[in-house]
Image (tube, rainbow, N blue to C red; front, top):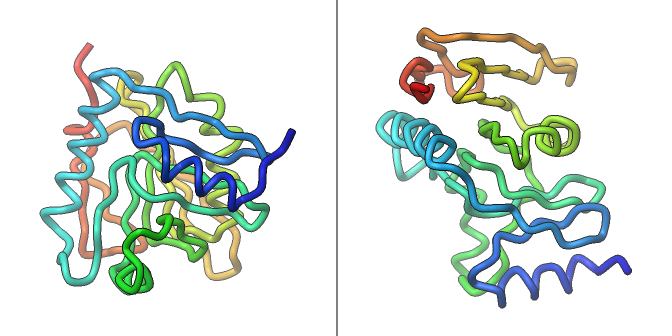
Length: 184
């Protein structure tokens, strides 16, 4: 039986051990990830944190929910959220942390447990939201796919296997992609 967004928020706030997402009206728990997945995500978050100002942006790692127009709500592996979007939570810091507005940058890191779901479900939802730059990092296969939102609201897709990549949505930020890959 599908649940409401309100019930989802209550479950997500009450279950401190779970990382709950809402997909097509059903609870979906984001599973624990491997060391390599977590290490790649941490490295990306660290590079972002060192280049962004804290008074303007926060770098989330498995934190906060991004809600698509269809109500599906997901936790990205990495997201850059403008502080201005967070101000509404200052009034009531016990509120469920969910963002309907597009964010400038987010990443899903591939894992055997979630790879198909991420590419078939989460990436299209992020595009539907209008997020500016969406990365899918494959830390073991050493590949990076990037979708960048264009002025006509379409997305341009590009692929990288290493090197330095300047962010489209945050052009003063450059990521050392080679540092994100896990040696196997």
